[in-house]
Amino acid sequence: MNVFEGVDKELINELCRLLRQGFKIICVGTELRSDDRVGLYICDKMLSLNFKDVIKCSYGLENCIEDLINLEKALIIDGLYTDLPPGTIVLANPDELSNDILVSTHSIPHRLVIKLIRSLGGLKEVKILGIRVKSLDIGTSLSPEVKRVADELVNKLLSVLGKSDH
Image (cartoon, rainbow, N blue to C red; front, side, top):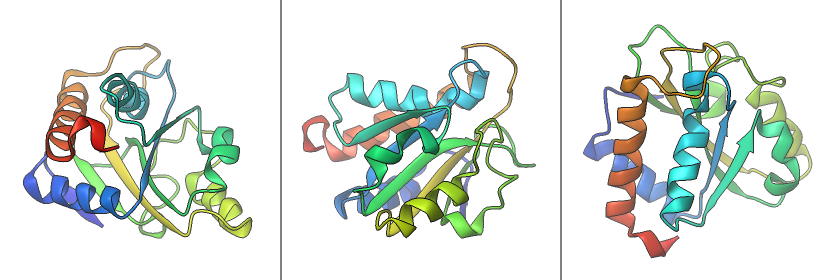
């Protein structure tokens, strides 16, 4: 598990490496839970900038099983709730994170959904990019710390990859 205090060159290089290896971005979140929508915010921003290798999974991975079952490699972006400062980024394998670290607003834990999809032949390789949330209050606005990290992540990633590459 790698922990990043912000969007640095090491993180961007690792994400670019994963995307060039064929990882597809899967964005997870809950629209009405403030920072828990950070994955969906990133997805919407990437799609608006013509980045095509993105799947939006509102309210949990279980709602996108049909889209995920034929994927071999996935980079799941979601909110993260830990004792780290808001806006901190974690990049990990699913087995490196406990079910209670990922934001628990999703009905079925990520590891369980990933296990199910793997039993059906999909998702041979998975990485989780978690962004530490600040607020899970009812609302549609991201906290300033989380929004800043999300915007910086998308901008730096797309500047390195190029908008039309994916």
